Length: 414
Ligand SMILES: Cc1cc2nc3c(=O)[nH]c(=O)nc-3n(C[C@H](O)[C@H](O)[C@H](O)COP(=O)(O)OP(=O)(O)OC[C@H]3O[C@@H](n4cnc5c(N)ncnc54)[C@H](O)[C@@H]3O)c2cc1C
Image (tube, rainbow, N blue to C red; front, top):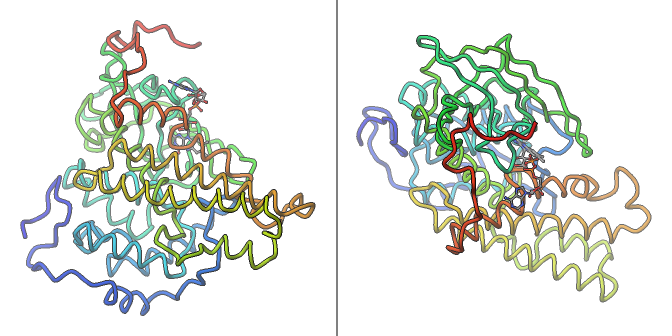
């Protein structure tokens, strides 16, 4: 196989020959040597809610990296095992059967930045950044949103001004999950305000330990403390740390968000999206604890079950529509369905808990407190519907009056 370069997805190191893909049984045989089986009735983690246990995740990733199990489709030298997509899916599915740590802190690196670097990074960037993502030694955050740029992300105002071989970045980001403990931030910045807003943007990797970075925590209702505002004051970034082309930041952002939506819509970290048998663990748990005793409770449980199944089938459709492993707009549909299923389960659990549900340690309390944010993170439900309408169903686009106007001439919110 040819030596890996930018755009190479399944490369092996020099001298290593192609090997036969592993069957599911062979994968289990090898995983069972390093991991313990998961109790199928145990509930998974809730997207890191209330837990920022970095060490447990790091130990788990360290255990997986030698076999390339966490990111199987990445090249071996970058912490993967050069699997094709089919073997990669078999491995991801098998992993769901074993005990795992809460990987939320590592999610942006593994599911968003890693795949984008694999497809768009230079060979030097891939060598520098991919392996530390795979083994958990470097955490990434996503510095996209700003006070005036959320759903309208192309309105980003953080400036990047060229100075020789460096860029000087200044601005303010908000809602930066994991900002409190990240080593790197994938940062969308404006390099040319004279271009219309989608065209003058460029993506950079920012060293979060730079003295010009100030991270202020924002505590969420579910106890999360990794949520932050990030102030960027004249931070110097080498041009070598620019991700993608100058002025190509919007395309990189869209691709990153597609990976995020596919990840939110598919296999949630710490759990499995595979068939868990005829009755999923959460439903069996409700029945076993006597909470489906009346017809109304059973009806609600069935509605939640149907949403759950629809969500998993939609994720399969979105994965099938992905081109060369890069998710398309169908991922927005998968995210919408998975959010609906998550909320339905969370509210059902709370409603069936009776008076004890008011206690902080009630079963499903964390899910209940986390549920509203699911409709916002990774792009709101309304924005996902716009994407499905315009880019999947081909419906007429929303009117966009500022599409061809230079960013510098736009009327700003403040
Ligand atoms: C838990 C959580 C984690 C997050 N993590 C990150 C992160 O790590 N990095 C990051 O960069 N950002 C992050 N975000 C930010 C998130 O991407 C934004 O909050 C989201 O895109 C919405 O932007 P906004 O908050 O500015 O709301 P706004 O864009 O101001 O939207 C307000 C309301 O208007 C609606 N709306 C806006 N435009 C339209 C339209 N065209 N059509 C229909 N309705 C519309 C929205 O749906 C929403 O209901 C996170 C958010 C949450 C809640």
